[in-house]
Image (tube, rainbow, N blue to C red; front, side, top):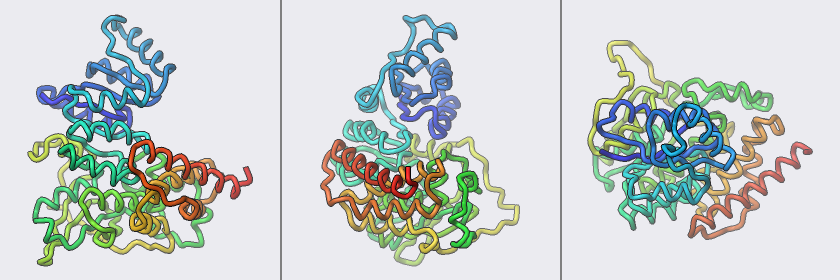
Length: 393
């Protein structure tokens, strides 16, 4: 039986992972659940899956979880270990009791524990793209040094991982990642300044958290995926292409030297890539809808518009530049998206804040988790200042 630790158990990836575990109690058990502030949902998960350890964001949440569990009939002596903070996250990620780590904490906050699991040689199902966007060089070096099995959970990279199984690395010509295009793929540039947060949060295909939904609308999320793909598969940015595919059925394609293009296609259900990461190299029956090939369908593909969506261009440039550029890109984007959601800046100003932040971040060597977190903080501070200048508050 494989024991699983989930970073971000109350988020959408965490919930999908627990759904898979619940369907296969003979194969999987939960060692640890790591979550933020949703104490009620976390307590429900504890009651159902009986983890050995629970890690939360602070003392107040820990007491809320404790009270919720006791009110549901658990004896104080029967509670799991209730821990708080980064050190506890790293501890459960690297624990001998953890066989598989699902890394799904949003943001750079997920990096330290994910890195700890990598250095402990765990199998890591990676749904936290910031781990590689901000710390790709450090993390991938550790993957090689510690023989970690790093399997991407993000649908595009998971699809690419499957496509790469069709041939040898030396024969790959390029990787093609698909983008839905978001809600504004047909919106004129002149209308983007009047876009509201509610409109930007109305994604046509996926149901996701606020930040990733806005990043999809700006194509920043696809830019992060380009950076992540470069690290995961050892490719230069020039070998990673993005195409807009509104139907979101084809997740990734790999073109080989003989002209063959291998595509990965499946329903838009994250349980498939999560289960793939848990069972690789085996394939097992997954609880996802099947594509009905008896029904007529049309799939469209086209190039992204880098004039209307400059953040994708900035992602390519940041990966080429190296150093702290991609880390700053992620940090500045998070601050700019937060400001847009608070209606402090306009939709086009998200990319303006990110671009100006990149111009102000010095060249840094990121050779440790702490140096990455320091670069992240520096870029956030710069971006906050730029937002204040633009919004007047």
